[in-house]
Image 1 (cartoon, helix red, strand yellow):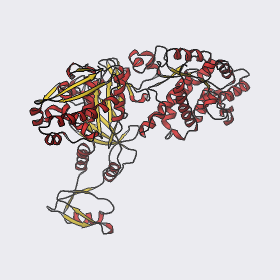
Image 2 (cartoon, helix red, strand yellow):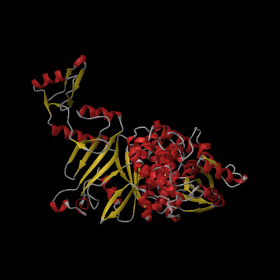
Image 3 (cartoon, one colour):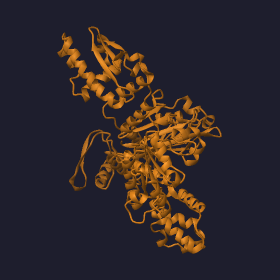
Image 4 (cartoon, helix red, strand yellow):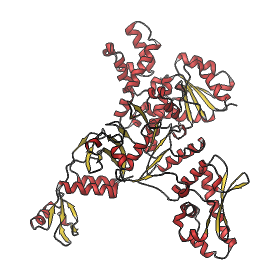
Length: 632
């Protein structure tokens, strides 16, 4: 993409709370109850390419009573080297990490610069000149470079051509533009050349779905009136290396058998794609030639049915597939969906989620849903939670507190009432909530980096669940329960003395020998015994010093070495003459949780943190082991 939509800030827009800011990802999922404001956000993005309507200016608006328009600030991140060059040439105070802020109020558009924290500052434009001589002209800049300037063409007065420009200005051949004129030109260029195309995709059965048949004379005369049929041939010819339909029909004119053979090849090409993308049932699409029309049938289990009698879910999916696949490789688009695939079976919704991931490689996908099956658990940052507070929709990033207190969000993110991830095809059972939190959150952060680099997830959290067993004594039992349900499962114990004793006891059973593991087996590092050893050192040190603030001066580097929990227990006993309690351990983790996001936000490259790389290796190892962890 050229410009990536990073955020929107809302001022008195519809009923969204004033000052709300929504951060976007390559895929952004809007979750919330009915009337929570999801559709209003979708509409706000459409306003980048459409005019404000009456609902945009008056619905819930305080400004309307003052005859003022609502105000939307769109923050864009630059993704193209060409754009960096253009903005550096145009703007004096532009820096590589700047965001471009486009302010839209329905009447005027304004441009400002922003840093990554969304604070705004005025733009300082470089001088710009316009050829007003009435004819094209050529002039020489520094180092003998010849520049040709067409009539009314504009040029920036940079160091390489400033003397030549000064001479042309004295001769009244060029005119200096005002700041307002430059600003207007730059904004026009953003709208015309740089902004992603905004597409709101809404299922329309008459427009998108296959008819039972089309008459040849009508289809050949106006193929655009039968887009699904036209798209079907585009896909088959492009991906199946087939002759285009018009050429084939002309060359086989009067040869019904040859035409049907060609249509069979088209059917085979399409069915390869359908088989890969629709895994809920084994269906095939078949095209039949008749003298006056082209007929479509869907086969399943030896039975033939016309497309019109199939389920609404299949109709939606085939329509989506034909429309998007026919357009080849999409890029530089923001594609919007409101409640996509709501009539799809859960399995179909999961397949749709994978299609969104493919589309988002070179585009942005933003959709509103109430379905838990469209949520990508590989990355919570993709999920934006909308809830009403004092009557106004409020935008939030989901937190542990929200999961506990909002049934819709808990269900959407796949949590049970006990805040334990629901069982999945593959399951890893760990000792406690801290183990679960650390592995899940670092896994998600690594997955987000992999997604940004267009690589596969480190650990696929859409297929792998991590369970908190509430203590090492129940790990074996929880693994057994999952195995009895015919699911893959393994257990992970800490490697300290207490956990290791229980681990050795539980692993004696031949059945569990290859299903239970201790942390020091998974992490090939000396002195890594407990989950605390995977906490980044700077975060661990900061949190310990905050929690033990009365004695923080007595804490030294050696107290933060591995095994961390063992070193802190030893230090605590020496300074307090007693053993540290379980309650204090939990309180220390609360401090770590409080510092967690702030720490990771301050780190530019988490791949350089040794503990993160060790956790990455541990997650990859666990993913391989759980794939083999099946009941024998």
